[in-house]
Image 1 (cartoon, rainbow, N blue to C red):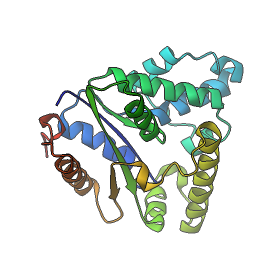
Image 2 (image 1 turned 135 degrees about the vertical axis):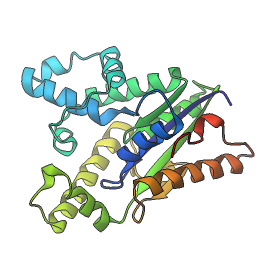
Image 3 (image 1 turned 90 degrees about the vertical axis):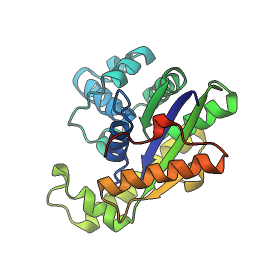
Length: 234
């Protein structure tokens, strides 16, 4: 089959980040997903500590190194950090993701715009020897809010507050991506190869189900799912 790459994202509370980590572990890939949100937190902390001008000096090569290390600061929260995150750095992070997507042989990427980067790579033929799959996790909003309430930073909030915060977050995210890329709905299901509803799935069930969907995706293309994308544990 050759090289393989996967991109995953989802609604807040859908468990897409956890699913990505569990997928990488299940197939025995050498590292957890490349996580753009972790870089946003890191650079937001850098901006807070040293000023925006210093943060803007961060190069694509440095961002790639951050993604490869994979360390994610506990704070600031991604929802807070992203509000005033410089668009220039946003584009730089996406450029770093695109570089990794085309150069790494077996990789999983987690981030809002990974599907779009993969779409552009497919259209431009930048990695013709590599097969890409994009995965979107959806969730019932109330269940997603309930899951988010379990996080320490959301302690004391109500379901109603969590639903309102999530709705607001998705709104300003949409505004940002429309400004940056001209995309009206960055989380539209039709943007993705596989859509997985995690509302009634626990972590183990979500992993099993996503690999079933991956097998079906290859079958529809008249191909056999490669061994590198078949779970080796669990």
